[in-house]
Length: 164
Length: 216
Image 1 (cartoon, helix red, strand yellow):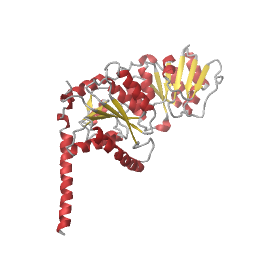
Image 2: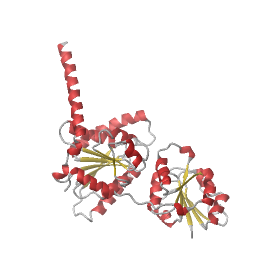
Image 3: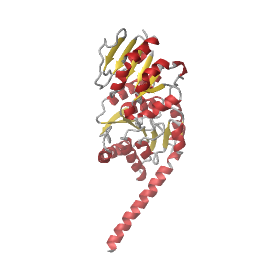
Image 4: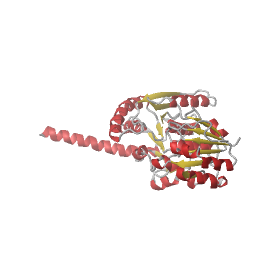
């Protein structure tokens, strides 16, 4: 079952939860063949019940110790711009659509998402453009995200510190 | 009067010697090769959350030459200890004797804490950091951004200034920092012996920094 996983991290992002469960967004997801929506809503005040979208499977929870399994099962992840979430999703090699929270502008957390967008590792939109983005987005433009190389760091340090 | 002049002169002299020592310690760091003499004792500042994940990624590739490893975490942090123990026990399979300790110090800054009270809590953290670093006498401090780094690196610097031990300061800016250094990064940039950044835009802004691509 083609699944979309939505995550807001440790904070709340009610606006995203509201828009992604709106009929327009759900229609756009259905048109793309998605059949199931899993929402991690954090501290938000919205926890949509399972029957809130007709003819569409919906599950919602606040927090889990690890969302790795939800990411693994997803075919598309829609996330807030938090660096930890972005890196976890890209590390799992899942297509990622980041939704910027306009209320958090100039937050340094946005730096990484913006750069990853420039490098074509993720798609990027705001709440007001989300529905349109879900209709028109092209996931094939996304470039794979290669993991960082701690080995380069270790080699450099060995040399610098004279480790034999 | 003569006494007063003498005292002022003495204080000025001490300050001057201190500044000269500081300059020498910071400038000569890259010539210091503790690895030639044997294992390198590392003080790892684990901070919390994302910082801990990143620093453990770096630790993954360090060889057994980096022993023992002393991890420092904030006393309010519960998650990091578990992550570190899991990491160290997985490492134990590859090398037979794994040596590590976990030390706790008060956090110098909670998220959203005001800057003025940060100064007070950083001084408080320094009170704990000094005896810790003086006792452990690490060859290097490895850190990547949590506020706790600052007092620990200051303490390491002081060991060098006093001529007791050269402590190398190795700083790796978090991968989250693309355009601007973190506050901790800005403070530690002038005194670090090796300062790593993970994005080219930072390398261009900070000429002393080392850029090896993404390393976490």
